[in-house]
Length: 590
Image 1 (cartoon, rainbow, N blue to C red):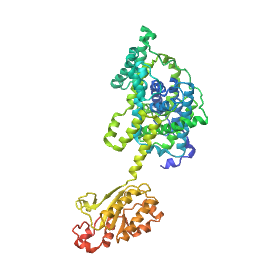
Image 2: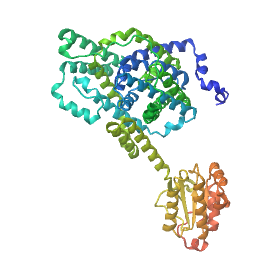
Image 3: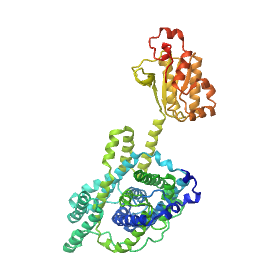
Image 4: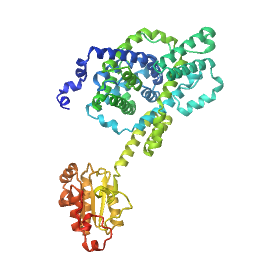
């Protein structure tokens, strides 16, 4: 902790100045191998993601070059690799296809503009130290959205998988309806290539897990399509190809800086920023948990923002943390962010060498690869866990999932995020309030919540677990009123406050008001085990005097001893509960 505090501000903004000089030759060798592995694997992925995003195929590769390098230089994770992802690609397609034809020059310009806007939002959130923002986005939002997006990806590839004509841009039900109307027009040659690609990928992933299954699947489909076209002719088979990619480094590009474009893309940019940041931070933290590294959310926001800003000027569309590439980077033995930098640099060289061969990559094989990608996105185990474990998270999951299927994708993201926040607020607005009673069966007669235990006829003891703030005071006031109504003879109320971590002015007023009502009824209110933060807040809001400074105790022993002296002894004489040690003339032990 002392070392972090001594780091100059300019070095914290340029984190690569901290780890770059410490790289050893052994580190560089391990990072080079990991980077080379990642650059090879991203070749089929980049082309596939570009297809999902409605971009020319080469842009999926460009998005894995400069953005990956910038994110590694300015981020905080040692293993996170940024680039195009499935979810970000499909959100971009959904957002931009209403303004321009996918693949067109206008569409590409809009994509670059959206990327620039996402980068500015991410950078702004990072500079504003809003790294904790993603903590309020439920994991169920990611799971539900990703599953919905996976189904959409597969649905949008049906036309290429089976060789039928389906209008671009329709919703799920439109796509499925058009497909079922053309079942009789399925192209057997195209379907053969698609199935061969799909099945070869499944086989390699299952029985040869160390082999890059996407590359094998792509090669299998491409070779089969080449043989069929040579033997039967493309006019007969109808097997078309992606086309040759430009054998060049990412060209310079420029977003559209007009106000109208910014206005049209504002909601999509904000939704995509939230989702992309959540995805990147989640991946970074999951890998950091395995290595013992600490992720700085604010720095990661800055790194992701700069990567998209720079990427928009180097023909890259929206990039974020890639789970597949990051996981592979970790498994390949990467030690520093240099691995991600090398992956971006080596990808540039690979593109120059292999770009001409993309002319042999059939659209049917791409469809098969995207089917594999879509299937891998659905986390069936996590979905089952959520459905079984939490009704609240199931609601969030369902809203995001069905929203992704039947609404615009950015709307689905907003809906899931808003619902998760609403459920969170609903939960914290109702702090847990339970009755506590000394249990003679426990060591030192510790307090228990067993409803069968007898209570003191004059003293009600409760414990509040949660914060007392403007959003929770209604629930607390209702509980106090219910206790006064249902237990009028219990004029004294003791609150075990060790579970209260925070109180605002309105929360303090609730306690002060309850104390006044108790005193007016010849009773009293007492606070037990008060934390320093709660004590300071009550003092600051002027509530200590109102609640009664002498009615605050730091131990249950002292509290019960003092409260017992204030009880009506005439009632005590006829009481058969005798739950306190004082009731027997003995001092209660802690």
